[in-house]
Image (cartoon, rainbow, N blue to C red; front, side):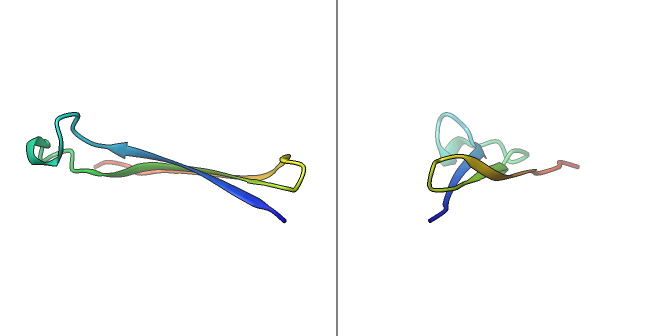
Amino acid sequence: MNYIVLDLEWNQCPYGKSREEERLPFEIVEIGAVKMNEQKEIIDTFHQWRTFR
Protein backbone atom coordinates (compact mmCIF):
# COMPACT_ATOMS: atom_id res chain seq x y z
CA MET A 1 0.00 0.00 0.00
CA ASN A 2 1.21 3.53 -0.81
CA TYR A 3 0.44 6.71 1.14
CA ILE A 4 -0.05 10.27 -0.08
CA VAL A 5 0.57 13.17 2.31
CA LEU A 6 -0.71 16.61 1.22
CA ASP A 7 0.32 20.06 2.43
CA LEU A 8 -1.91 23.00 1.43
CA GLU A 9 -0.81 26.59 1.96
CA TRP A 10 -3.64 29.12 2.20
CA ASN A 11 -3.66 32.85 1.62
CA GLN A 12 -6.09 34.18 4.17
CA CYS A 13 -6.74 37.12 6.44
CA PRO A 14 -5.98 36.39 10.11
CA TYR A 15 -9.26 38.16 11.02
CA GLY A 16 -11.53 35.96 8.89
CA LYS A 17 -13.17 36.08 5.50
CA SER A 18 -15.34 39.11 6.35
CA ARG A 19 -12.24 41.37 6.64
CA GLU A 20 -10.14 39.91 3.81
CA GLU A 21 -8.23 42.16 1.42
CA GLU A 22 -9.89 42.05 -2.03
CA ARG A 23 -6.50 41.82 -3.75
CA LEU A 24 -5.62 38.76 -1.61
CA PRO A 25 -8.67 36.48 -1.69
CA PHE A 26 -8.95 33.38 0.47
CA GLU A 27 -7.43 30.68 -1.74
CA ILE A 28 -4.90 27.87 -1.92
CA VAL A 29 -1.59 29.36 -3.07
CA GLU A 30 0.72 26.35 -2.78
CA ILE A 31 0.34 22.55 -2.83
CA GLY A 32 2.92 20.03 -1.80
CA ALA A 33 2.65 16.25 -1.65
CA VAL A 34 4.77 13.18 -1.06
CA LYS A 35 4.04 9.60 -2.04
CA MET A 36 5.40 7.01 0.41
CA ASN A 37 5.65 3.22 0.27
CA GLU A 38 4.70 0.80 3.06
CA GLN A 39 8.02 1.47 4.83
CA LYS A 40 7.17 5.21 4.84
CA GLU A 41 10.01 5.94 2.40
CA ILE A 42 9.40 8.82 -0.04
CA ILE A 43 9.08 7.47 -3.56
CA ASP A 44 7.77 10.60 -5.34
CA THR A 45 7.07 14.29 -4.67
CA PHE A 46 4.88 17.04 -6.08
CA HIS A 47 5.05 20.83 -5.62
CA GLN A 48 3.02 23.56 -7.30
CA TRP A 49 2.50 27.22 -6.41
CA ARG A 50 0.18 29.83 -7.79
CA THR A 51 1.79 32.65 -9.73
CA PHE A 52 0.32 36.10 -9.18
CA ARG A 53 0.01 38.67 -11.92
